[in-house]
Image (cartoon, rainbow, N blue to C red; front, side):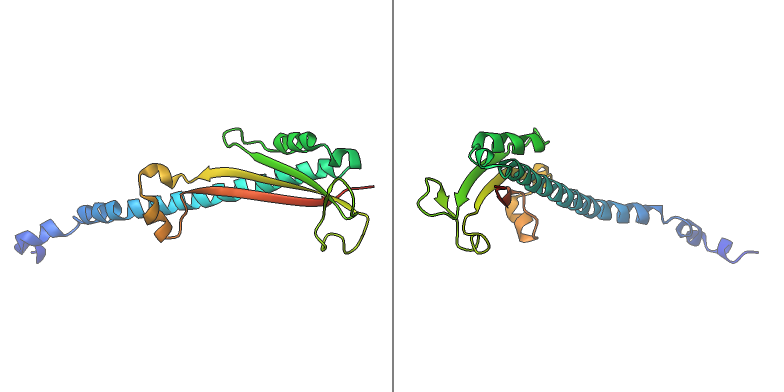
Length: 166
């Protein structure tokens, strides 16, 4: 005779760990879901940051072609917005021009720009886009998220400075 058959309660405990597994799964799923959302948010912020920098670079590339395009701020805005492919996030583009030649009607560049060429002209395009985290939509307070190091909203910015071809 089998020894386990003599103990009636032992048969109920053997092979009935499904309840324990379900409890462990129920405790682990919320933690795994928040970690997954944090990874998705990081990837999304990284992607948007690259796109914002690319849009600034596209605007500066347009402006750096000639002195005429360096003065065309509307054209630099158009080039940056054409490169920006995310219509759900509003991109703000701020182009500017500076020259190393003093006495010009254009703003004077900082000294570090003019170290190599005293007659150079530069264009600068700054881009900014507001972003918010996917985690912000879960109803978790932003103070809790910032405490653990995850931002819920903010601005991502890009900057490109290029010398104008003369």
